[in-house]
Length: 96
Image (cartoon, rainbow, N blue to C red):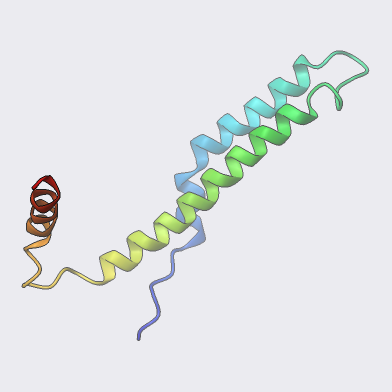
């Protein structure tokens, strides 16, 4: 079996530029909103939540890019035009 195609890291970087900027702005806003003398305590939990959400989106995007590259490398076979028929058949059988 051939190895699945790799994705250039720069492709992921470029696809996440806007989301990265939003994330970083949100982190800074959280720290700025914390009371003086409580910058860490007043923003740490919110920044942790923002980071967890961002980490999840980054990983999902990276995996999806790898899936997309693998699918693009293997065009559908000529005899596989029945895919929608299988779904319809399954739905028809389920409704009977």
